[in-house]
Length: 187
Image (cartoon, rainbow, N blue to C red; front, top):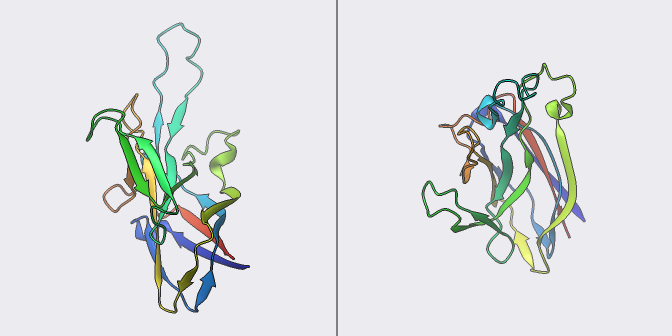
């Protein structure tokens, strides 16, 4: 059993990181062992409109945060395909969208430090293991590159959760206060 951990921060704001393998690895099974992350940004949350006057909701400020996912470029359609439904902005509403190599892993935290009970203001951790490659002999040679790309679902439009989208320099959703550690287990 070999554990590999890949870490990157939001200092580059692209949401994608590429790593070069320093030694050869041969394996048949690959597991997503653990993800630790601190991903929060005002772009990844939206305040939910309060109710109308005198309905009893005037003392709360609810918000929704974006779902998060990581796409791994070394996975193919034999390993992992995420099935999702379109929001209707680019395709017909509820059309199936298949994204190869994308694993949902949690949700963004809030940037509102004034919420004393907000336990997800600190880093989140999700231990699995999640079986990514099953009984398929693989060789990662020295110099092979593996890339991890972060995805999110835009919640900034009231009442609509958008399709999965790549975090990029244009969205700045993965900013310098964000970081992620991904641990893979090779067997």
